[in-house]
Amino acid sequence: MILKTLCISLTICIVTLFSTTINAQLDAPYFSNEDIEKYKSHSDNKMSETKARTAGSPESRRLSGMRIETKEKAEKTRGHKEKEYWCKRATFYKNKIERAESEIAAAEGKLTELKEAALRETGKKRRIIEADIKKIEKKLKEIKRKRKENEKDLNRLEDEAHRKNIPSGWLRCQFDW
Image (cartoon, rainbow, N blue to C red; front, side, top):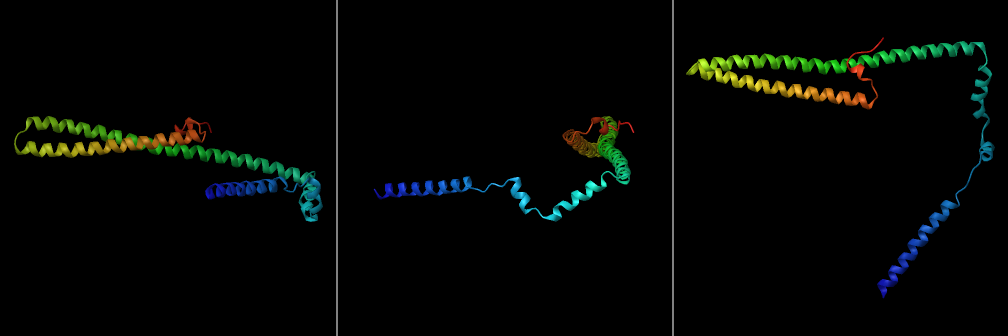
């Protein structure tokens, strides 16, 4: 019985609490533009009056023309720099991949030669050649891992460029100046 009374009183308290916060939100003050005009100070209008006076003058039109030209020039320069940036980043990874592929080709050629030489040799010389073969295989594995890592980095760069709406030609350094 006591528990039932406690639950009911707790429910009543919660309902009362929330109903007062809702009523407080409904009774929030409302301000119109007329209210804002009442409290507006004289200094708020100074900037707009100055702009209105100088907007029609020939000097202001000449300066605005110069600003447009410099803005266009700045945008063009920024565009060139951005193109170069993406081109250089992509070229960096492509060069690393090419270097790794040439090292892989050289290591595979040397590995083939050593395996052929190991077939011809016996005894102590053969063990030495087999040790060299293991070293080159280990080096080859490491080079392949680096190449794969660089390919992943290049793919990440391409994904980043795609997310930023960069044309794919910029990554291939194909753009018109």
